[in-house]
Image (cartoon, rainbow, N blue to C red; front, side, top):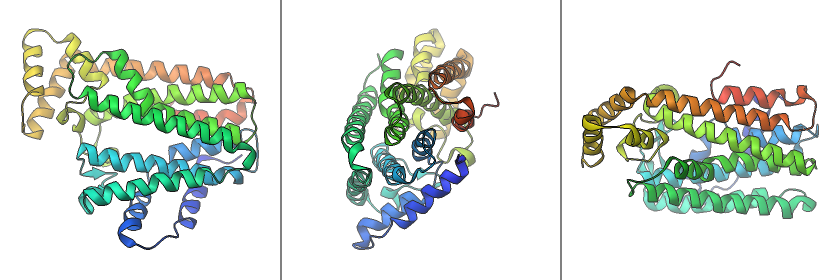
Amino acid sequence: MYNANELLGIINQALADNDTRQVPEGLYAPITYTLSLGGKRIRPVLLLMACNLYREDITPAVLPAIGLETYHNFTLLHDDLMDRAEVRRGQPTVHKKWDDNTAILSGDNMLVMAMQRICQCDKEHLPQVTELFTRTAIEIDEGQQYDMDFEKRQDVTEEEYLEMIRLKTSVLLACALKMGAILADAPAADADALYEFGEKLGLAFQLQDDYLDVYGDFKTFGKEIGGDIMCNKKTYMLINAQLRAKGRQAEELDRWLHTENAVREEKVSAVTHIYNELGIPELALQRINAYFSQAMESLGKVQVPEERKQMLCELAQKLLNRKS
């Protein structure tokens, strides 16, 4: 079986081999730039790992895998534009390096390129693969809309938030795993169990991403710390802080949420202090660990030898910086 580094090499080579369009440069240069920023390539690696559970020859899954990676980077490009983010993976975002219109158009083209690549799978798998991908893409848009709506609401519940991140983040990881299983002709029950594994892993991963937005290190996180706090995003931590804050803490938290043009360092420091007082980071870590455990239970349902699932176990642990 392939290991994660070998799969990453296959993916990067396939992305390079398929980066053939040059003109108009204003359209394609931002796409090449976006895909060259790297990242863990988690989704295509998961797709190829799922395929490799059942088949040694993963070649038919490579183009769909880089299609998913192209789609994922398209969503990041547009997210950065909507959030007015200036840094992605330690580099300027497309709308900062070029402009807003370029980000919109190049992003749109990435979406079409993604579909084109995904549709180059084997013909017998095309109906299932396209149905899975299009349903996932719709769900991700729904999750993004909920995320935008929540910025204007003060009554977002924990349940609503978790459903939003399931749609916005988890379903694409789940899609990658199930797509890989479909392309390898895996049993339907295994494909569904792999979907569940990806869904729960995605919830843990997004909760950790939110946690790192407050408590991470810029050098390793790749973007400015405190972005969610500055945007008043309704994360697991903010929602639970609002539920638990009383008296002075509630008043101070509300004041920062309604302060316009706040100094970044002051707001991030003040809100983080409130989180610390309320024990919010510990709550977030507990929920992350709970979802990780559920993910591993789902992986346990997959009917292949345990040694063949070891790569998926190791990748899941690495994503959440776990040692056991």
